[in-house]
Structure formats: C-alpha cells, structure tokens
Image (cartoon, rainbow, N blue to C red; front, side, top):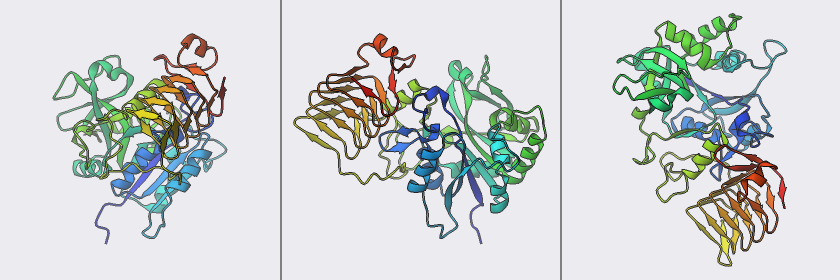
Length: 405
C-alpha cells in the first residue's frame, strides 16, 4: 500500500524570459545557466526530488532544445520505482495552437493527470532561486482541506506592488488575490509586510481538473494560473496561503533561511549571483543535506597558475586562472582568464575566454564569449551601451559567442 499521498509534480517551464535578453535569445528562461554549475530549472527540480517527489512533468514551449537536453542528461532516472522526470513539449492536443497561458498548458496536458491519477498536484514555476521542502506545503494543504494552497513569501509592504499579493484571514484562507496592487494588503500579524505569491501551488487533483475545464470553456479568460485559476478558487473560499517562513529545510543556516529570488531581470539575475560569493553567502550552495543538483561536466578541477588568484568568488571545474586577478565573481565551467587580466563583480558562463590584460567589471558574459587581449567591458558604460545591453543597474550583458576586441 502507498504510505504517502500520490503527488504529481508539474513544472511550468515555457517562459520566454524577454527581460533576461540576451541570455534568452537562444534558450528558454529556465535553461539559463546559473551559479557556475547549474541552470535555473535545477532549483525547482532539486526541491521536488529532495522532498520525495519523483514523478515530475516539465511543460516546455519556447526555444526548449537546450532545456530538454539538460533534463535528459542531468535528470534521468531508472524508473524502477515508477519515478520519472520528463520534458513535455506543447503537443497541440486540442487543435493547431500553442499554449495560451499557464493554465491552458496544464489543460492541454491533461492526459498526464489522467495517466497518473494523483491525489494531489504540485504546480511550481521553473525560474526562481531558492530552497524549499514541498512535502511540508503538501501536508499543510491536506490538513487545511483546501482545493488549492498558494505559497506566500513575506515582503515589505512598500515593495509588494511588484508582485501578485495575497490577503488572508487569521485562519490562512485567502480572501483576495491581487495582481500588482497599488495598495498591497498587510498580513494579519504584521501590517508592514505582505504575502507575495511565489508562483508555487498545491492542488487537490479533482478540484484542479474541474476548474481547468471550467476555465477552458470561458472565452473571456486569459487561461493563466495566477490571473484566473487562483482567483476563481478564492471566490469560492477554497484557497489557502502557505507561509514560506514556516518551511524548514535540513541544513539551512540562519543567514540563508527563507531565501527566494525572482531572477526575472538582468539586475536581479546579477544580484542573485552576488549573493553566492561572500564568505558567509546569503544563499549557500554548500548545503549537503539539501543539495542543488546540476550537470556533471566531467572536467578536471579548477587551476590557478602563475600567481593567478580568485577571491570571494565561485569557480567551476575546468577553469584556469593564469596570472590574472578575479574578485567577487562567479566563473562557470571551462573558463580561461589569461595573464594580467582583471575580472571584478562579474558572471562568466561556460567557455568564456578573457585575454591578456583585459578588464571586465560588473558584467554578465554568456557562453563562449571571448574578450580579446587588452579588451575592456564595464569600464566605459556609454561606449558599452552602443554595442551591448546595459541594465538599469549598470550591468553589461553580452550574448553567446560574441568577440569583444
């Protein structure tokens, strides 16, 4: 007999990620490399697998090749106990059209639910950086008797206007679900903070199936999980909030407890990387009790030669720092930094090459970018704006395979 509830994981990974351009020029947002050894989707998959959920469907759509390849190479399983982690592309099961929203993505993939017959369905986003034990949220959902439970993270009320916001009573039942309100609601116990939706949901399976059918028949719906499905459950009084502060992850520290970042912009993506590099990082990649699993590179260890140094930095396998100085940066696998070069406060993705005496500051370099000898990036922002993408925060971002003289 099954001792645990039968849970199906659905990961919504079809995001285009326009605000992360040029990093999403050639890939879906969840496939963007992060943290030297990972891709963004590795965080949600690690959380689900660590939490005991190994029947997971990843719904893809936009430029999904690298994402599909990563999942098949990194997240394969034997299936001996019925476990699977599989990408599911848009299949046009309901006619010659792509997904029209996140709810429609699940509706068009209803066969996945019918095949597995789960009692509960965990629907998580694919592009946030965090640790979470989803089994605790599922248990809270079961105990509440709700049709849907929405994960909420406490944010300062003054900043909550940028999020979907949750107003709940003292029992946790959601009374309003507001999309980017001008006047966000406070929480019951603290009027100065607001529950922001994390985009993570737990549904009772039968309730979700019925609601998706109703939504599909509504010609006025945008068929969006946060915009249509959740508010419909709220109107019925069947939605509850799960306080992310209550989630306890094995091995967490006081410093990184409750860490969650929406890396939807170049500046937030960059800042999340900077959270990794201090001596006591805001987000700790080295928690062995709740590991973030990424791709295995089969590369040799990193090497520092000819006086090369890397301080307050993360350095991936196969990387060589030769007579150069790296500070406060994240260097991915197979990066080479040549003699006399200086890399400060930057994110270098796999295959990047930094030439002799080059200077790179406050920059994000996508895969296989090459900085020629003596090249400069992030030194003269006005010059950089003429050639590259410069974020509002002054972060210079260069797309894949470019050469900077």
